[in-house]
Image (tube, rainbow, N blue to C red; front, side, top):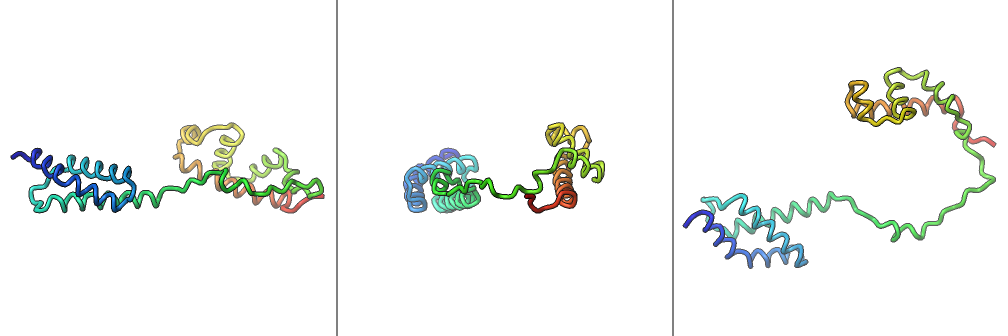
Length: 176
């Protein structure tokens, strides 16, 4: 009997047992069916090793490993929270007309440009290209012959420096 014929016979023999194990692992018929199918596909791709003495145990181990991989993947997946379920009950406090306006409201483009003049030219250039010229990270990286990551780093550092300079220049508090 050939290797392929042997694998087909093993899979046909083990399929009901794999289905019962998968049903116990998942509890959901659809998920169990998917797990059995993935196990069979992997077994076909791998082929039946010649040194396997118990093919059912080999398939069950393969299926268990696939199950563990799926569980790990599900644990790493972000949780998606529908906005309507949780956020409907949130109370939004309307802005009071009597509330003092933050000092940042007085900042002008000229204030930002004056602060930019105090920043290292290679950082300033990236900020100007991105903020004022509306260029993408990729365009900036290509023009300046730097990596995209360097563009992001320079933008972050420039923003922090700008914040410090503007706080010194304008203040952090509120105006009345």
